[in-house]
Image 1 (spheres, rainbow, N blue to C red):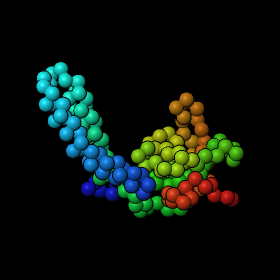
Image 2: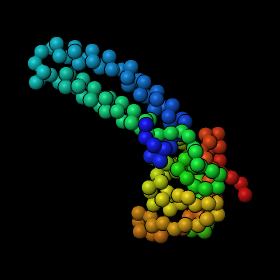
Image 3: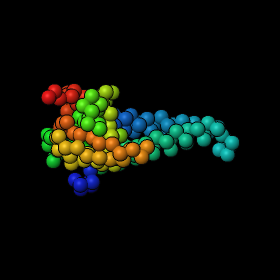
Image 4: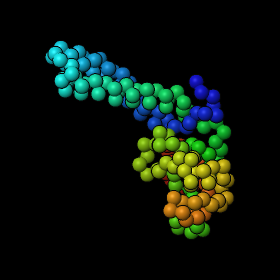
Length: 174
């Protein structure tokens, strides 16, 4: 297992979803193997489109199994070190832009793999310009970053709290 510094945060919902997908792919292996064997018995493998298609499915599914397995092995749902009031990976952050308190946004800091099932909650990577700018910022702190368009944008952290699926997209009232 990777050391704690290299683990990436994923939400509990995402972990469950990935584990279910992994199990479904593993359970599907015998069916794919049977399809390959059935197509192999049709004869010449050089001109057997059914065999080629079955092998392609097997390759894709095995690649996905490997991807999910690595992601699960290198991720955590633990939020050790994440505290209220500071923007960290695994935090839901409420911000406003360029001093305009009406231009607000709420998002989770993390990778796309960390994304929650909450359709109202966007996920920004800690390596994105916005994510990198606010990482470690405390409530009330304003930071600047350069958007992909080249514009300099100021962002103020209104609140930051560890991800909680029950209240993730609900902004704090002040």
